[in-house]
Amino acid sequence: MDNLKIYVRLSDLLYKDMLGLADEEEKRELDTLLVTCKLKGLDREKIIARLQEKDVFDGKEALQRFKELKRVGKGHRRWIRWTSVAASIVVLIIVGLWLSQEVKFENNMVVSGVINPGQSRAVVTLADGQQIILEQATRKIEESDGTMLHSDSGALVYTANIEKISSVVMYNTVSIPRGGEYRLELADGTKVWLNAETELRFPVNFTGGRREVYLKGEAYFQVKRDEKHAFMVHTSMGVVEVLGTSFNVRDYEGEQEVVTTLESGKVMCVSEGSKEQVILEPGYQTLEKRSSQVEVRKVDPIQYIGWREGKYVFEDMALEDIMQTLCRWYDIDVVYADPTVKKFHFTGDLERYESINVFLNFIETGGDVKFRTEGKTIIIDKK
Image 1 (tube, rainbow, N blue to C red):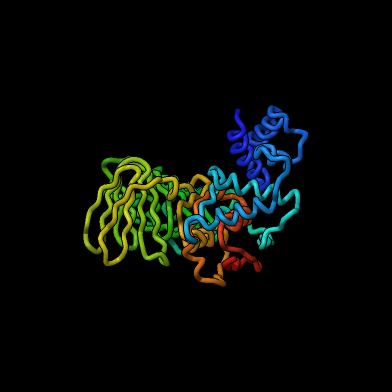
Image 2 (image 1 turned 60 degrees about the vertical axis):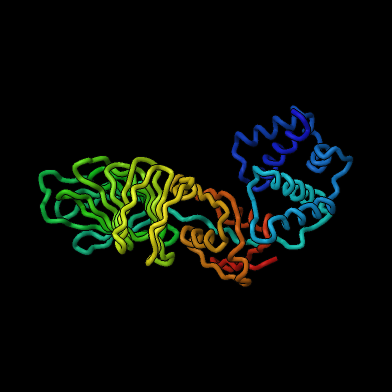
């Protein structure tokens, strides 16, 4: 392996290890690489110097390179993936300065006080109006028509009582607060992942020719295929109709738009206002705003459904939009001391079940913003 490849890989591994993001396999790879390259006995400052083919690490020069890197893109585009060459330069600075203390950063990362992620919690409102709080504990609930509700490990499963199925449609509503999430299996076998600040209203048992549910917020659906009974998701701006497929619908009131992203299968989106019908293929999404035509665009679905798999993926996204998403999940508030930072763009990934602090430190390292926490309020300013 040549010096350049060693440099890039060690930079990735050292940076992730320093931020506490390296998994056990990556830690073993780091140790193995250090031994293989006969670098195990050297401190990290000398490792960096060797990779640069220098005798010593020049912290001042590294800091200057970092500042020059930050100016690339004229202020608004900040790329913070550690898999990029830019991140390799960032780790050169961070690790070297962290160990040598020859130069200090002009700002300190002041994200103090750990802010932990959300957890499984919800409230189910039964047909008679009774409200029951759902958390991790196991619970069994019986609806008035005999349907059994079984709650366990963050999931609520509906099992119909075939002998008591009524033609009268009874509705339940599952509500997710800020800082919460929950999984749901409807009586037809459809699985639904509900994100923070979300409400889903649905029949206890589906009757008639359609399976209709009503969504506010964000949910990922894996619809049980039934060609005789279409599955329909009603949003504030229209309807998403499917037979059997996997897709994500985002319809938060404050965002003034409905975004439907298809992972597999096929769906038809019908606009409530214009009655426009759009059929989606996998890897595409519709974006609908009031008083405008439905926009169809090709996307990487992981950016929109990654939350269901435990990861937020932000690709060239405005800081304001990133923080809006994180506010719901971490149940935090944000104050912008300098409103101009709202439009700064970032790219990066966040493990959904980790503290937000690592991610904010990561953004602060690679961008022109700084963070300060007061309780569960994050104050964002320009450097």
